[in-house]
Structures are given as structure tokens and as C-alpha cells.
Image 1: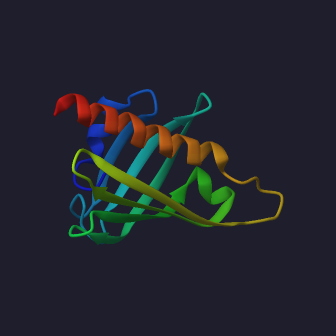
Image 2 (image 1 turned 120 degrees about the vertical axis):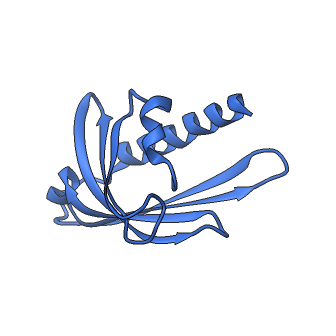
Length: 129
């Protein structure tokens, strides 16, 4: 999710169809990437900025720059923290957002998509080990 997110397109191709680096280096502070994902049969694209990264704590934070979500949220950030265990890891996913209006629904489907991507990634990594 930090250094090689473009691999998600082969791990979960039905959920993440493309991840392209637009500026900077993968996993580096300030890197900008474009993500295309499928949610409820609808394909959407967003551009994300790496706003925080800590390789020691295995943490990365992405902030929304542009894309389909900008029509609903003034800010949208996703933070992932991985904690290694004796066998495997635990991943915490934190999503922070500010709705443009009160009429905007809680982005539950996006939360569910994030959990599904992390779950499928975990299964893939466990199978590859």
C-alpha cells in the first residue's frame, strides 16, 4: 500500500483497476498518484497525495487532491497503519472526511471497499508466504 500500490491492480483487479504515479516516488512524502476503483459497479477516479509516511511504524496517509469524491467532500484522508505480529499483521484503517453539505451520506461503501482491499491483500500475502 506504500511502496508498490500499483500491484493492487493484479491482486484485486475487480476493485482497483489502475494506480499510476503522477509525481514523486512511490511511498515518499509528497508523491501524487491517480487511483481508479470500482464501487457498486461504478468506476471512479481520484488523485491522492501522500501527506504522511513513516516506514518505522509502517504508516501512510493519503489525502484527496481531486476526483469524483471532491463533489461530496471538502477533505478526505485515509491513513493505514500496519502492526506486525508473530504471524501476520494487523492493519488499522482510519478515514477522516468533511462533507460539503449535510445531505451527503456517510461514505460507508468506501469504508467497506477499503476493508475489502486490505482483507484481499492480506489473503494474497498469506498465500504468497
